[in-house]
Image (tube, rainbow, N blue to C red; front, side):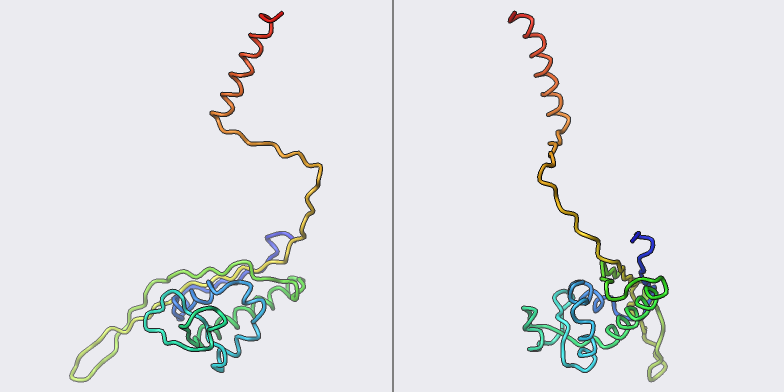
Length: 183
């Protein structure tokens, strides 16, 4: 299947924290393949997502022992966005005539979006900033490619850099000039 036929889903300036999405992205593409059904457990607080970066102030929980860390959270809003993205990507794949069971997640890209500035009104006529840190989310899906067996009789050519090629050329030229002298 060509790369142009592979569905991908993009969301720009979503109001979910990029730091929480980073954990989901880093957590591994294979993790999504095995545990998409387990994302419902995050919503029900039965399974925590490990936080390895941006983990200042993140509490400890024994639910992340399987991932060899102690800090974790249950980012419900981010998980609901992810489930919606995957459901939409699955529908896109069906519309394109692809087998939904064979689709795998190739890459998840999370980037910081521009901060949105709002204001909240406080007592005694004061105004405080009310900001959010949205992010851009891209999920790239594809079908697994077939593995090609390596042939045993394949000749591997050694790649040489410029200096090595020059040495080889000089050695060949010396051999040609030395050959008539030996006769």
